[in-house]
Length: 197
Image 1 (cartoon, rainbow, N blue to C red):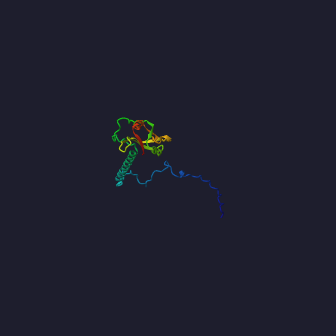
Image 2: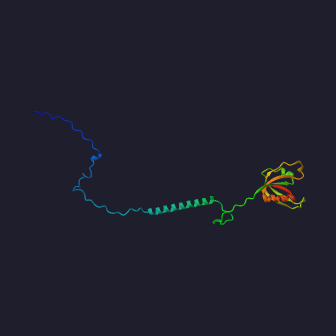
Image 3: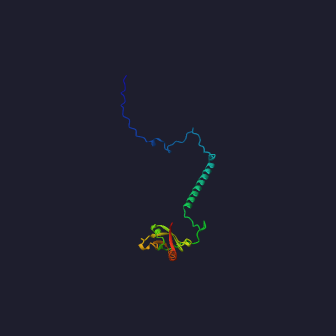
């Protein structure tokens, strides 16, 4: 019995790498369904699914949001009113003025030298002090006294002279021009005194 020699073994050719896309069947190469496949059916129409209470929650959320916005606007309006300019006391509240407001004329101030009867009182004064000037008519206690200038500012206290002790002392005041005229008239007929404000 003779044995056939074994067939020579040849190496098998390498298989080319296949990608993932080549393993999937393409739509063109898909086969039609077989006789065992079920028949296709149309998907029935369903009513939309409604969650109970969702509309009420949405309305409640919108209502709370409106209240929050209204409260914020009210707070902002109150802050603007509080920070706004104050209206004039003589103007009607809530109504604009009929015309542009006219600035009050500022009285022109002058330096008025005034001789005070009591020289010792003048020595107590310093520049920047506020004083009232009083005119006293007559030397007796029953004489009339009136305030000629109120709250005027002392600008200068000159050094007293040796011979001026009996005739009082001089002080320079910053006063409006009409007040300076009243002081000059009062010093001619009355003795002037000052009081610190």
